[in-house]
Structures are given as structure tokens and as C-alpha cells.
Amino acid sequence: MSQTPAELLAAYKSNGKEFAEVAASIPAADLNKAMPGGEWPPAFVIHHMVDAELHFATRYLHILTSDKPTIINFAEEAYPDRTHYSQRSAAESIALYKSIHAVIENILENASESDWERKGVHFELGEIPMKQFFAKAVGHNAEHAQQLRDLMA
Image (tube, rainbow, N blue to C red; front, side, top):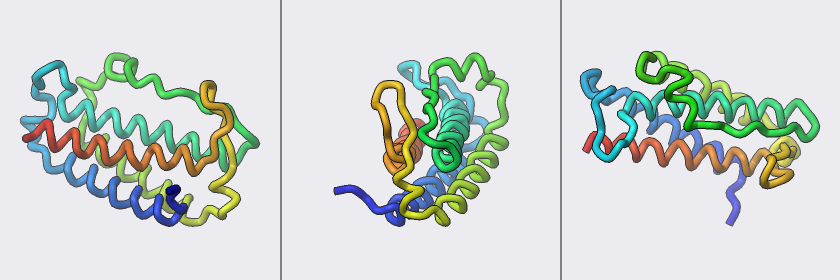
């Protein structure tokens, strides 16, 4: 069953708050600690999430303001090296994550039903309504909050 925009927004808010709280609870000494099995250290997960939120926010804004914009893929595997995850501040990434999240919440709380149905064009999936792109982001937040908990267990 498909969730309504109000249900998606509620989950986005909850999952975003949860991610930010889990991320902020990690001791500074553990942020860049090597993880078994080649897992990213917690700071890398945090940086990934802020980068993803930037990409997702851009998608929503393009879909809301353009007719069927092309949706650019998020090449997450390139980010750790090319955006210097090992040198970035986790505290700054958490702050930016929270800010982006709050702005997107505000924008989408005011979106109409027709706004949620506006489409972007994905290179593999074709025309996708914003609601579907947003639903993916809701799950992404929850998955990475759990990943941080697992890394710190």
C-alpha cells in the first residue's frame, strides 16, 4: 500500500531526527575508527548522508520547478575520495544534514497533491513522480541510522 504525502513526511521527519540523534551520539574518538570488513567508519556514513540529502533536495526542487527534469544519479562510490571524507568534519556534516532536512520538510509540507505527482525523468526508470523519489529517501534515512547503530554495537 502506498503512503500518503503526509505519512511520508511524518516518516521523513522521524527518520531524519533519528539519524541525526544517532550520529551526534557517537564519541569523537570513534568517528573515524576503522571498521571490520571494510565498512565505512561512522564519519563516512554521516558525510554520505549529507551528500545524499543534497542530491535528494536538488531532485525535489528540480521536479517542483521544472517540467519533467532529468534526474542525475548519485555516484556515491566516488564521493569518499573526491570529496575527502577523511578530512571533513562530522559535526559540520550533521549540522548541514539537519538544516537540509528542515528546509525540505518546510518546502514539502506546503506542497500540493499535484506537486507530489510532478515527475522527474530517471535514466533507467523513466518518468517517476516526486512522491516515489521521496519515499526512497525516507527509507535511506532509516537504513543509515541502523547502520550507525550496528557500527557502534
